[in-house]
Length: 418
Image (cartoon, rainbow, N blue to C red; front, top):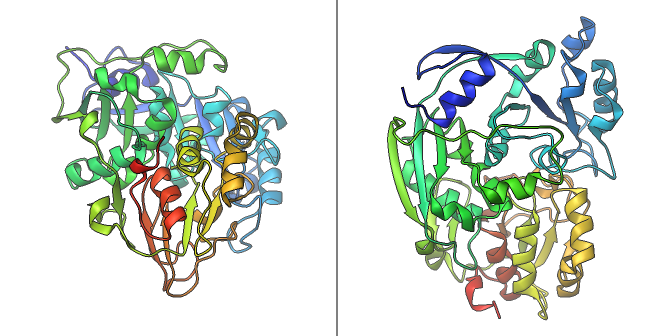
């Protein structure tokens, strides 16, 4: 019987020849990804170690620049990792730090055909690398102790992409379009992406799409393997891997087809990620703050496109633009390839890698005041997320953020490319 990528991956993870939608399986975990501040004292009090400490990765992202004492801090996270038995080289501390949905991919921990569990909400981001990636949240702790997670094999939705992604479009625009179209239809299902259009999407963009899985309602997203993915993995994969593809006649609960060339910049908000509209409907809205960073942006493709918009231009004094690279590796690469210099010359403030302003504004000089309006490329835009709960937050791609920082109002970036 023909199978989806989801069915094949969960069969492999559970040690079965085949599984079908509705089956209950116990999946063996390949890698667990943790962020700082996510600590379970119960494990320590009961002297429980990680089932395989070599397969647990900590990436410090939330509290490297500031701490929220009521939640967690970096020092306790270091101690937690040590008590679990996690090797020091698996703890991406300051200087090697970055988002827990980015660093494991950069460092070759996330591989096609594997089962991946993340403690944080946007764990589905890693599905861009052809693995079954799920946000474990508090079930991550028993998963660390046992190395297993039980689940019901979910239904899948097929997303076929054709055409090429236009200039000025990023993963956020694709996921916003899906959020519009699939609202209420993807709940607890898996989005499986494929088709010839996939070739035009850099890995960074695919991760930006998968990052929106939970907002769409999906359990996770899965991308077909292709040469672009293999090229990405070649210098970094920590071991052999077996990519998974769906059978041609696999059965899906629904199928959708999109021509990437028809996509346009979309804007979400204010205050509601599901309130999506074409950029044209909010163009001209005055902004005082602009931000790019967090697990949905701050990757090199985001920064490069923003730098193209800003190249040779100056941010208006009416707007403060804050940029938080997604990882230490991206920050170093941006310094080496000139992107960072372009951002700084335009007047951006560049911060230490991490979640930045997306974590209630606690790690960023952005800090929205009462009555201000912000355009952000981060993952959330609800009231109070980036400072005052009397501020408005719109979400868009990084190029829109950059263009808006130049003009002081929400602006279409497509007229700024040379």
